[in-house]
Figure 1 (cartoon, rainbow, N blue to C red):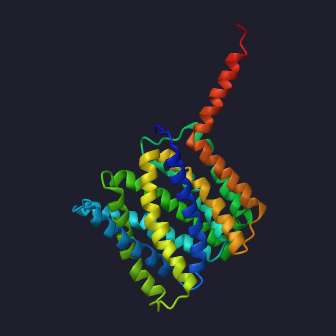
Figure 2 (cartoon, helix red, strand yellow):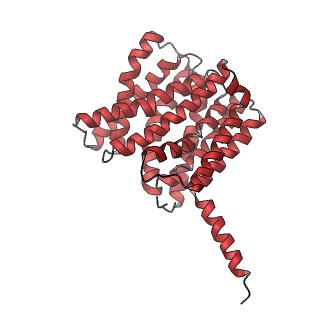
Length: 312
């Protein structure tokens, strides 16, 4: 995939997107103090879908009529919203918000591996294999070997976060195969509608009805989660992708965890072990390797140095 050049506006929008998604882990942690896991997912996807459909109608965008497209949007809603949001929410009830964001950063690693399995134009190269190995090593270090051998709630929370990243990776493959030609805003509204339809009966069955008697802090958190971190973030995400390209947009993954970790430490007094930061460094290195720019720069630098050393 040919990488596009990023201008100053694209960089600013990408950083803003990273900050928005970095802050959502704090907002979710605060909301989960009063709202059950599944109910929070329904509120997030349901109200975001309403706002996005209003945006679609306002813009006069074409709404798909094909049953196959709507079925694809339903599956996309499960893979990209219902399942990962549920797993991440559950994970945050058991582990720190900063740790959740670090594990979520591994999405690119799993996306690279799964894309290679299902997409012919995304084959694993030696560089990508090295990136996957680095990322997987980082994930194992973050979780800790002990957590892989035991199944208490903390380790289950970490494994749930990894499950969310795998679901995101499959969502990317599904979108490439089934949603080509559907506008980003319509895709977002459609998949959020699909995830809402799936999550409502599950939330009612497991959590029951909510009485909506939340504190002001929870309402503010919900506004941020629904409007800022879902509606605005999706629209901004596709805008950045259109102007900067998919490869450049992946860099947002490096911005999210530091923001979430800092907010978790300042607001929630979270403390992460040293291995979390070591693991994130390896995951960040994996993204840099998969992205390829530093790799190419190093090769060019080495080639230039070698050629300049030849006597003339």
